[in-house]
Amino acid sequence: MIAALTAIGPFSITMYLPAFPDIGASLQATPVQVQQTLAAYLLPFAFMTLWHGSISDAVGRKRVILVGVFVYTVAALICLFAPNVLTLSIGRALQGIAAGAGMSVGRATVLDILKGAAAQRLMAHISMFFSLAPAIAPMIGSLLASHFGWRSVFVFLATLGAVLFIAVWRILPETLPPEKRQPFAAKPLLYAYKEALLLPEFSYLCLALALLINGHMIYILSAPNFLSSVADTTFSSFAWLFLAVSLGMLSGSFVSSRTAGRLSTNKTVRLGFLIMLLGSIMNIVISFFLPKGLPQNILAIPVYSFGMALVWPSLQILALEKIPARRGLASSLQSAYQVGMNGFTAAVIAPLVWHSPQTMALAVSGYWLTAVLALAIGRHYQRARSVKTD
Image (cartoon, rainbow, N blue to C red; front, side, top):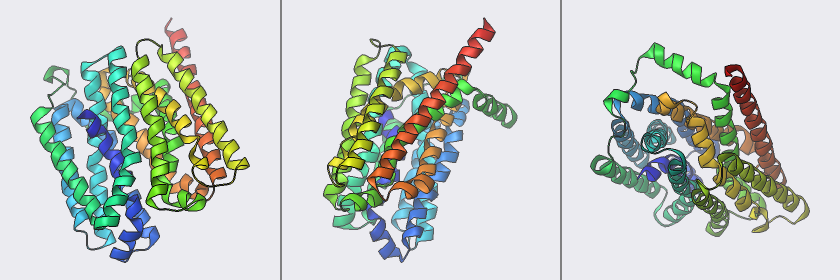
């Protein structure tokens, strides 16, 4: 259930992408206006992830998740009955406001009850679902839109929200007892955010993870345009791409869960970075020296995604452990880094590179290299703080 709550945010980002042409024709909107409905979701999503965890630190985890899922379901119904693109954008913005509750609060819930290798194993299992969401969602959306029209996508999302609301209400226990809650007061809370953001070993870990995730998210966010540049935008082409992403993410998450407690965190991170480097090099070689097309232009994606999924749980836990007294706040900031980077990728980077497999491959390598730099800076500050303390 926590995995489903964590995955609903990215699931909702990509599920309606294949329906963009259908939406434009139905609502008499330009491609740019339809693309803006994605930004209308991502920006409130990124902003609100800053607050969901902190609110749950004050009032409890379950209450925040229930309200978030309820608002998400109502927003899906607004999108379903939208008569124009403006109403659709409003519904998507409302969905973005609510969808991050499950992602931010869900991670904090895990660390409320588990520690160490047990937490890493559960985080890895959750990552499997999280990785499937943005990969499978467009295929489901493509099938629904082609058979029943674009509004059926939002029927599906509204139904999913209603089912999750009932499941949380009936099953999920409250994991944060009253004596461990933090007051939701503006001045102390803003000070806590400032302290967290100015803690380099936390911020750079979050940045590194967000960059690594976007090394494969750029293919998902650019899917219609990237596929049209190398092949076509039929269902089979979407299936090739998203199955490649899913294969790498699922296998990497599985290996991460199996090695938890057997392989040290540092060794896991090093191994994952080396595998992502291999995937990046393969991607560049294939894109520059082989004719473009499928499946060759996606062969390296599972390799990169495997390495990313391998390090994902470890980097999440390493970051959250830097601020143990406010895990909800730390989880919110971690989510905001990821979603904010997704928004930047969708709005700025993807349009610059989606026209060819070569530029896409170079973008992935750029994300990996910048993540290495961010992790190195974070570890430098961690060592400097340890020496100062000693």
